[in-house]
Length: 266
Image 1: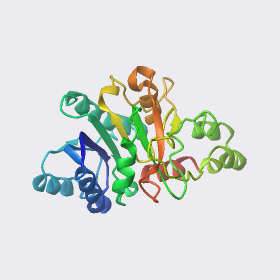
Image 2: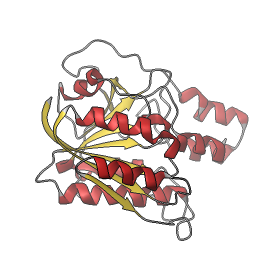
Image 3: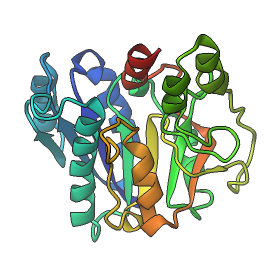
Image 4: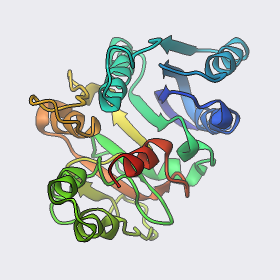
């Protein structure tokens, strides 16, 4: 048991096939903390996602479901819809910051169907000198659109690829960036990797560091961007400490929204 209070938040769309396993993951996470709240933010589902969420809410305490209905009709960009839904749970987190210290964000799809080990979760609290700490994947780090690192990923990979549009560019800006981060034994957070932005399907954020930081899905000239990057850039008023924790392994699966990026641009 970790003597801390957390909100677990997920954005959900057409995730019915994954929800049994995702909910098992959520319940395991809840068992480790003192007080928890679960927030699902849903939009645009055409399967049984909402029915399954309602069944879960009836049988479990402190579960909120926020549904935005059909956002696609007014927000054609997928990144705008994701940003809108993410900002909904940020609003809830800030309203509840007197009762909860951390926001644990999970993808609601295949990336969260495998149980995150207790050891992986606990490793995030060995050294709490961070505003946000994010996950790793054992078969190669996949969430490179959300990643910003001074040498590994100093640019918007999809923007750079689209600018050139060649197979060589796809290999250089996309495929060659899927590297494997090998965890090693540490008990003081010395293996945490500092980044400007990262997610990887799971991240823990100090709610007091949010400070009105929000997700944005497009640039001023209407170009889609990864909604996670502007949030990281504005976290803790732009002075955030963000890390990838190599031992915070969440999944061997590539999340559905990352697959969608590959299909859209690749």
